[in-house]
Image 1 (cartoon, each protein chain N blue to C red):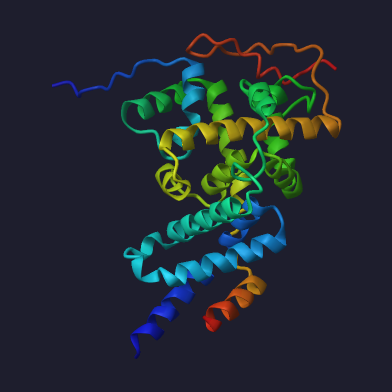
Image 2: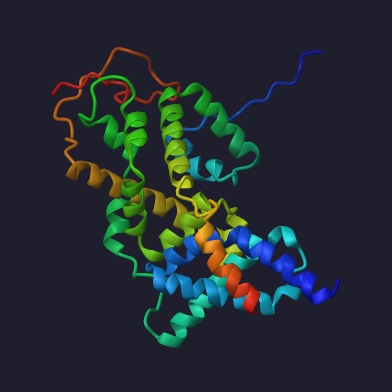
Length: 83
Length: 222
């Protein structure tokens, strides 16, 4: 018996680009996600544009305030102690 | 050990782990260090008052951010200084940027003539340039983007923090990214990047969807 193959609807570059944000932010699910992955695997232009968008997102992430900040910690540690 | 003291120890640990992120978010709301410090303090006090309501400690970061946003909105209502979050949205920015793509703009520019100009552009962006572009975003877009890209909240968590529908979160993020890219491009142009006059397509491949591949013509004629 032949293995079941998945058939994805081919989407346009415009459709693919419109799904980039949802995919990068882990919001894209199901068929829509599979269609995008399939498109990116075949379309070099969209692949490169997608990589670019991800790089920019990761650059933004580097500006996070999550890094350890001792002066801030000391300042607000005192406030909590005084409550 | 006395229960209240244990609670305070747990509370302190939770808050101090997040204090950098909280202060960063406060700065994005207030746009100055003095008010940001005040907002963090008010948030901590309010959070401590309501600590017993926090049932799921794994959601403490989201909970603290929601309190901060509420505190900020309340202070605005009290002061009647602003109607919307942060600075008013510049409609021109949004409309003007609707179809902008930084990737396409770099590809069509004379940024560099070979290699991967788009990746090089990103790698050469400085922290200051990005921070400037982010700080110039209209308030509600800036805040949503910071929660998503810097603090890594999900759409659903952002929706809960800002009390807006998920659809609004998605559209704000999409628009924020476009406006941000436009601002980065304008900065780059000020620094001397020229838009290409002639683009010479490289003989290459055609996308499976039939799209014309001008982008890979990195041999731009100056």
